[in-house]
Length: 420
Image 1 (cartoon, rainbow, N blue to C red):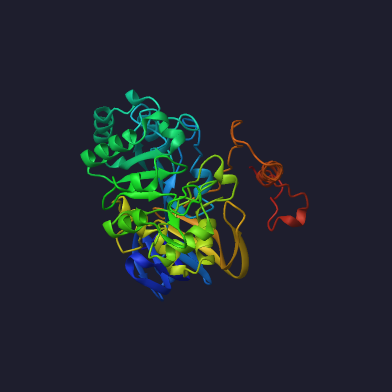
Image 2: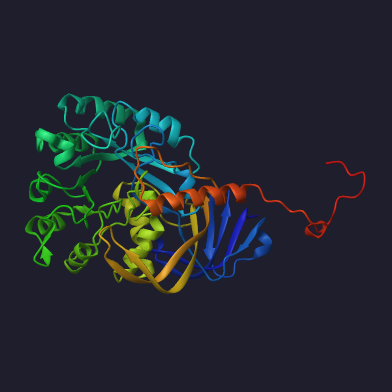
């Protein structure tokens, strides 16, 4: 007997090389079968998803979910249930001083799967920037000891390398991050922004499997030049460096992306979702995926770049619907048409498909709605964003307390004398 059967959707699972109409059966939290025409009488619950796009649960490689413990953190459960993200990789919100808290108070309590990249700075992202200004906080020995104790929760290392984070210390924070990653035998993710340090300096220290995030940002001036990849970017691509989108609130430029795609870059799609970007222009991972559809990728391309590819980049078992794997499943309404999407500079493109999540399952369990908290007071919102946030809270309040006042609203009124 199966616990759950999703019937009739278009199952797109690039990790299992599957793209076609099929049913998905779930038993004891794991995928039991994927095939057309599975018998519904064998399932305790049958859900008709005909016409929907069904994918493995999304894997967001770059997020910030140290909710209540960092400057940028959001509650992952308030976003997971409505977006299809079932695995969140927190990208450096916590370093050695606080990653135990991220593990204990977020990862072990969240409905979704949480993994972390440990920040080379023990401070993590307790403030907007500046975590590498005091080198005494970049203790490789301490970070390695903490990461080893936390086992497979820590799947890599994170360092933000730009002029604001490193201050007068130049490349030294990056050198320590490389040392930490090599000691842990895990990949290093490097954030880039306005230099110095410059892209050529940064990429020269990265190796195969390391991750350059914000790869299509307009902030660094030396990712692309004169309509082509710079020499440093070309060498990094040939060396096996992984490129990650990391959209965020300021790190996505369609023109930079166009040059990179033409040059052979196939970025992983990630949101860099945090307390600011969740209000736009990233919003969530499906929105970012839609922007890659606007750039010319197919539905299978974007699903692969948001499921199995990020999972493989950090060596976790996720992003596929193979029999026996954990039944993390996302269901989307896929509406065809012409949908405008925009980058962080106002550049606009048209996507041929809009993805709207309608159900998210973790280990075969449907995630319930969770209301998001208001943004913290240090996150500035535009006037339009503030109006939208107030409207969201009002809608949430109304939806939480429906009132049915007519007797005909109830199919079977309680009989006289019935006890509640």
